[in-house]
Length: 168
Image (cartoon, rainbow, N blue to C red):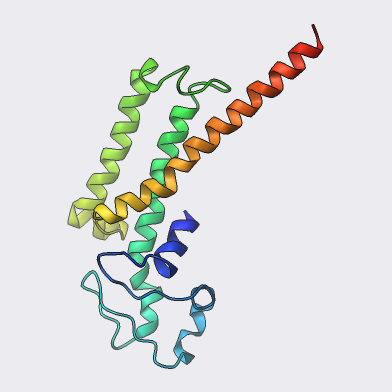
């Protein structure tokens, strides 16, 4: 989740909102923003930073925070599917073996959608709607968890085979 937050602030050159990118050192030192010469972030999401450019790192973080929260939600749903089997691949035990889990994950993601896209709820939760570009970023930062878990399960199965073969 931190990764997508940093990515949005520092590296997201293809963002449709064309928000201002900052360097890693500027992001990590944002508390010293008032002393930066010529820092003038572009407006986005109906936010302007003319009066207080440093508010880009407070009020302006709504998109980065929303992306982080959404990555967390998606990662947890993918982890739920990974938890179907401690050491078996999702290919061996596909998600549809537990339809209740699928319904629970769909319900969780739909709840998240409602919070993102119903304006009064988005305001209460201090999030903003995500566009197609943002969802592609969310998936790019979330799906690797699924792949890493599959690799770890594979390594665990290989290790278990070695242990079992020594005992035979």
